[in-house]
Amino acid sequence: MSTKKVFSVLSLIVILAMLISACGAQPTQAPAATQAPAAGAPAAEAPVAAGTKLICVIVPAVENPFFGAMQEIAAAKAEEMGYTTLRLNHGDDANKQMELVESCIAKKASAIVLDNAGADATVAAVQKAKDAGIPTFLVDREITAEGVAGAQIVSNNYQGATILAEYFAQMMGEEGDYVELTGRDTDTNAHVRSQGFHDVLDQLPGLKMVAQQTANWSQTEALGVMESILQANPGIKGVIAGNDTMALGAQAALIAAGRPDVIVVGFDGSDDAIQSIGRGELKATSLQPVAEMALQAVIQADQLIRTGSTGKPEKQSIDMVLITAENFCQYKTFAPTGSTEACPQP
Image (cartoon, rainbow, N blue to C red; front, side, top):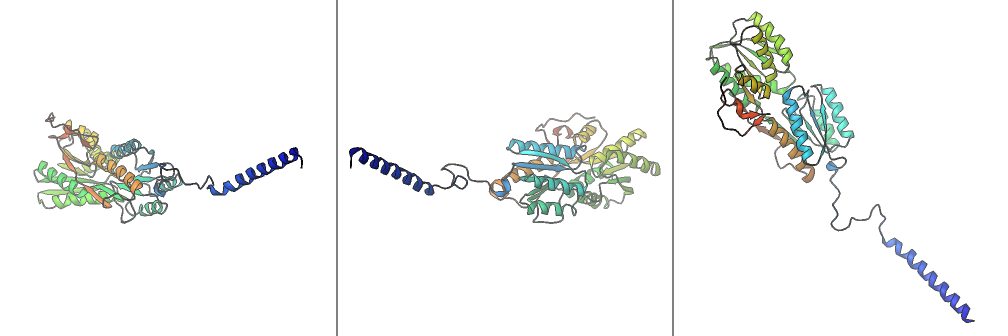
């Protein structure tokens, strides 16, 4: 065999060896789609945190300062913690609430913060979200089931109602005719507050309730209701209302009728009510810790998303604060300002 032929054969053998080596090396590598992450790479998120890192914040109508502040505070905190947010309103319509929850499920939200549209009617929506792996954090209003929501964080409505009723009775001198304006009948809080009022006021024989009527949390409706009640009961001395918007509507009707002397108290601690107290119109309100409830809902949602547990019981209650002419200037946006200065008296 010539030297040229020997060289050709050796070259062919080398090329074949290289091809065989290359083909044999491939099976030892994992396919790109299933290859394990490199050391130090972040682990895949738990199912509840998958998707868009979205938190839905659903409340009733934001025209009510209470709900508007709650949504703003919760959404701002979630965004600060790195989430995107979707702000939605159900208008106290349980059917619309279900549609909004289903929309959040479809968007693969990480969690839902919800001020609900009814204690009974909301259970199915919260359960549906849970079944989809999305925890719901209820604020302000509870539901009639446990073990479904991630947490139920509410004000101590009964405690807030009793301290308000005690102050109202004191302002009334524990005697005279009064009116109660109640909230929406489907709202558990409306009943809890009314019960707290009466557990105090019914013990005082000098006080007489001459009218009790719902104004459905509405300022406009309360104005009309108060006008009608005043015509039938011109001698009333006081009005105790289940929320601030109804109290402000009643106050407006009384001022228009030339009866600013009637003692009116509200419930929630909205900035509008606090300013009215500063002007000497409303006499008091029970402040709900809206800021604390909203913040806790988001903080606990994030904790559950990251660790699988909030570290807290499902039902959590926060005491309320009585706001009067003595301390009205020390609170704003449902939270203390930090000021301890004496408030200017109207």
